[in-house]
Image (cartoon, rainbow, N blue to C red; front, side):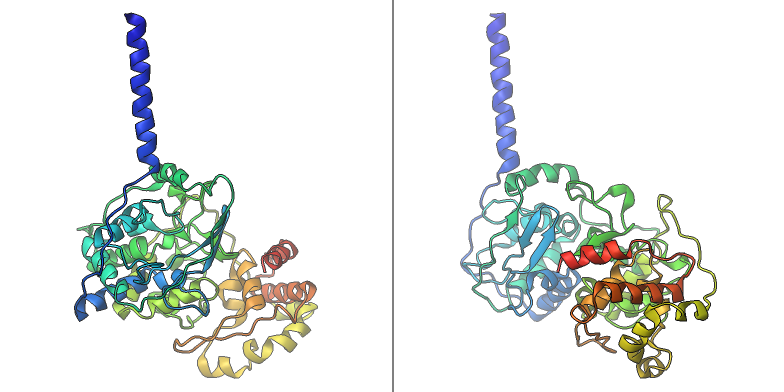
Length: 421
């Protein structure tokens, strides 16, 4: 009898375990809807602002593609993902999704048919949005032009091509509820926190990730690497050796040139153009909250740079290359600097950073023309500068800014970036 009891207990545990595993790896389908309800203008306007704050078009609109139709490749350590079609097309988009299906995707990372979404879709942050904001975002997306388009198949490495494994990732990282305002902080600070930690999902780029792609909770906002660019730390910006103020950060966040710092480039440029579509009070709230983030005690700070002696920099081989390729825009007498009060290249964040990555990326790829004020277009030089010339210009620029702390990984960084082209 005792033996039968033990066997029964083992079988029961096995059934429970199998049931739990099945629940972990599968979710039920939510019934399709034939036609989502239309919404009023106020709802659509609010929804548009949430979608802009969430950078939805940045990821779900591929270059040359239709708005929100997907197909943009996202390079991850686990393979390449292609963003999905989130237009209301009923066959290839989300036209059959009800609001509950959309809410589940936003909060749990589960598609309408029950399959798991990869966490490159930042549902760990979107779950912090209010019910009203999610409903408004849904209404707006259902109002855009439907587009029949199916994104290419993902190319994920084994075993991450098995979507059910995401369920275990969710156990570790999918936590938290919609953000509630903190009563001891101002309305502006709370609004900034809501946008930064919720829709804006800023920490997903500006935080280091662990081996399975989760944000390191002890190092949030300490900086990360995105698409080969450095996403700098957002902590201690107001107290940095070269501090930011709210006016400068608002300009940067809205696609303009920030005095004494420069302008957004790379993956941050389209984000800044999205923020520029929001009410200016939202950009101010984001800046207010970010400038309140304190420097992390776990991050070592670099020593300050002494005053620069131009005579040393002018003797470098890169000086003549800079004069020929860069000085017409970035030299002391360049019209764009004199007329538009743009900062000297040596004082921009890309040159004063501890890594040469962003300067090299900007020189190679340039900055595309945008519709923002004071457009900071720059052509790319990937085809006209070889690695030796690029390293010489970077060395010269760094020497003008911080000669006592030269970049020691220039050649390695250039080769790694070129390899990704």
